[in-house]
Image (tube, rainbow, N blue to C red; front, side, top):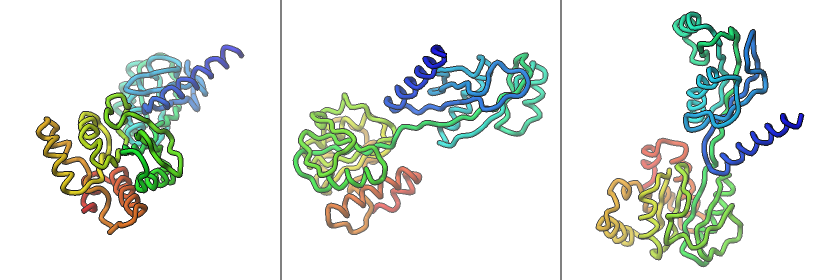
Length: 282
């Protein structure tokens, strides 16, 4: 009983470690078996990055077979149940040739049974990262509230933010040097740097892979910033990807309306093809 409890605790710790690192992964659980199988209902494994990271389905054969399924559910974000048939070589090859169902997997082993495995994706939270200039900023404040309302994880990078609602995290002394901030591919980053940190922030982001980068700035400042960044070697591809002027064109005037237009643009990029979303922007 103690050993079983310790394994469950280790499994939970591994889940927590991966979730906190913002890594996508999938959990595969044996839910039913027929015939002979080393894996039993309740056996679990964690799969991520094309590898089995923890746990067991009862052997290398079913575990190696479940990796590609796990990668597909991570990509789609949708769970699925698959059947793994544990057959000797000839029957496994015949089964693969006969079956047209992608949720039926045949592996070569002498068990002779079948395992039904539920594979569930765990994806990192979508994050809204706001890079501020410091001090009171009504748009920054409104974006924190909107981000929380939209169930985004809100991170504020700002030395001295003045906010009426707390974000999930505040990172100080990083706006001028983003090298130590751990960006994720699914991040949406909004620059509210008012010229103070435009250049270092954009330069830092140019070498990172994130879903969305937007900057609130006048057309004059955008041109000056981009000309300078080009002269310093920042790629045209990155500069063209920056959403600026930022936000959907809804005629926004107040800070709350501007924040709404920015949030709407971010949602468009998250839910639609980025190219389609951009057609609605300006």
